[in-house]
Image (cartoon, rainbow over all chains, first blue to last red; front, side, top):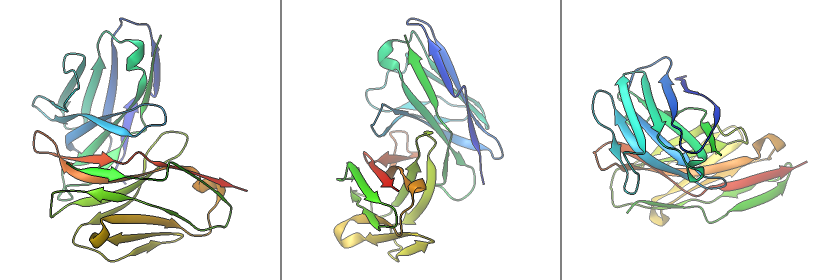
Length: 117
Length: 117
């Protein structure tokens, strides 16, 4: 089946620094990737939709200047948390949609756990 | 607005018991998809099923079965003869359109299932 990887799987950073998370589709091309955020014991909330070669579309309430998304190729999207603060500590999950006709076939990455101290 | 309700926050059963996880959804769309995902403690989402809104047939896959009833906007998930390895958080999700026109998933809050030996 289709595989999506994320790197790093976990990261600890100091308040005020920036962190970049990578999401890669390993065996398929993804025109669309999604970034979700999950706080402990809570559900997944969509942050933004990333389309290859164009600007990301952010959900209401998500700061686009704080969460920078780049989808430079059909297999890679990155999320950069800029000037991270402890409240940004969360589990970040990406998903990628295959270019095929199965429009709703999303494949999820294993997630990245971010801790900001 | 699209909404998914999983009323059961936590369920605890003893191994070999059957257990049903409830999912009720709200949507304005006539065509939509419903999903179930499993999230074990490792955090990675495991895809279980996708169901098209036009297909109301119940589905069985091994010990798993799903009951889709459009009349009550429900998509319930039953695990037969539960096992300890079934312990996880289970999410029900509904497809929706993002502000940019792409499809996204709206997740319920999840049901934490604990299967005790």
